[in-house]
Image (cartoon, rainbow, N blue to C red):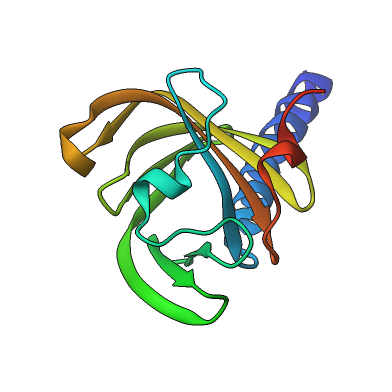
Amino acid sequence: MFRNVAYISIFIFLITSCYKYKHHSITNGIWYIDAVEINGGSTNFMDAFLDDYKEDTSFYKVMMLENGLVRGEYYTDDTTLHYFVTGHWELVDHNHIQLEADEYINGTFLTEIVNSKKMVLSTDSNQVQFQGIGNVKMVVRISRDEPGNQSDTRPN
């Protein structure tokens, strides 16, 4: 009996610890969007979605705050803030995050941590309001603390 209670207690501790670790890893640092891919394709839609986007000098950074707010900032020419947006995020469970921000992101995403600096978010249902695109499958490739590139998290 005591052994069963101990196993259950350890299991519950591990589940809640994993959730807290994932929450902390998401809110700790600044994330940069390296690529946005739609409907299973490999095309990076960053330049289609963002005015004046240039791969070498533009970046979109995201901060997920403890209180469930998310702030996105789009910069052009390395330092010019083109625009910013505020939205909401929630860690639904250990593997899923719900995001709503901008006219490009509104869905629940599977989170795949590639390493301490890279994460892939994917969903079968994201509502894109931009130009009336609508509901799409989406993969968002992101890097922590500094911009990366699309190939960082793509299979070889």
